[in-house]
Length: 477
Ligand code: NAD
Image (tube, rainbow, N blue to C red; front, side, top):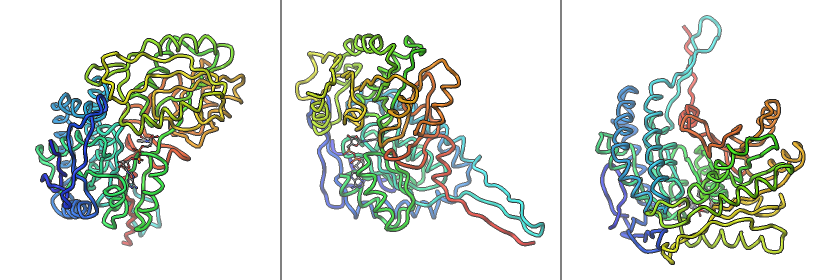
């Protein structure tokens, strides 16, 4: 099967005629090909988007735009299983995770459909012979560079908000996982989205991705991925002063005090790192545990890690394969740095004997006694590897929690209300969960980071401010 680009509601081959192979992470075998696009394809999609923005799509009344997005949301739910199957095959994610992701994209469009006609401006007190008001206007054509870990969800959160705000979109999915998004674009056309409002161009990051970030016809760029690529995208967009939203991952801590409800925490701490095989920007990848309960928590978590089953996505295991051989190699190299450092491999999960030998499998791994300054406690691993770190005092816990270059999500586990709030305020993080952990939480919750985790906010109503620009109008009577 060869998947083409979707531009102006038409399937079109890459203008250079080239394709890229798509491998199934569960067995490492080729199962499809996608268009390998370049500058000319991005240019064509950007023109189609501009035409839509200046034409039918841009002229549509908010209520009509809202109804269209409701219809899309409902259609996505009707296709939930089909989308989940495509996503599961392409990314290696277990079906139950893929089903949740397919439900989440529908929920994003539902949420933003309801917000379209509630995006009000304000009036501003000024001398009485004036009326001053603000209006929120779409940027125009927005570019979206999507990673491979949650194509459906990340597309939903950024494209849902961008379309709701009235922009026309050009999307460059990750070369490793774009097939579900091509189907979403087709469904959008089927429910009546005008030609050019949503365009998908596949290809390599250094080719199609770089061309999108640098294209002068792109008025705003939303990027999710690695810090290094995020910097390149921001620099390219700066060439034509396009604003950028960057969501660059994390090394998110969960801090467990000795008064915490361990029973409630254990399944959450496990899931926060094995969900999507740890390939989650907001994975709870560091667990800071107070000394008095440290041995108990490590012991009980070890049992849970050992009980996990890793295998092919189609078998719906606890943990699927990683996305590709490069990612597996990266995780293994980082794990290798534990040797001779005093870090203990406290427990590992089991690999299903029937998992194909050619798949990209890393079993869930629990590391204890990880020094806070070790790379395993500092760097984003993007695999099912949890670093457990002991601490004694609240002050020390805060210092360790804030000691990485990232600041995306944090969890605090304690019954002490004052300590909950002290931590919530002092921790450097875009989201803080108290006695729970959301890995980004529901679609309603604004999400984004500080420091190396990036800037700007997506999700929730807040995202609509990022996908619009504010105009002030002063009328002298
Ligand atoms: P990446 O940042 O290179 O890729 C993310 C997206 O950016 C993809 O669509 C890719 O095609 C595109 N891209 C790559 N180079 C580009 C360029 N020069 N200009 C414009 N777009 C470009 O990530 P990766 O190489 O796939 O993964 C490497 C690491 O990044 C992972 O190990 C993980 O730590 C991190 N990562 C984080 C997230 C996240 O959700 N924050 C997602 C994916 C990867």
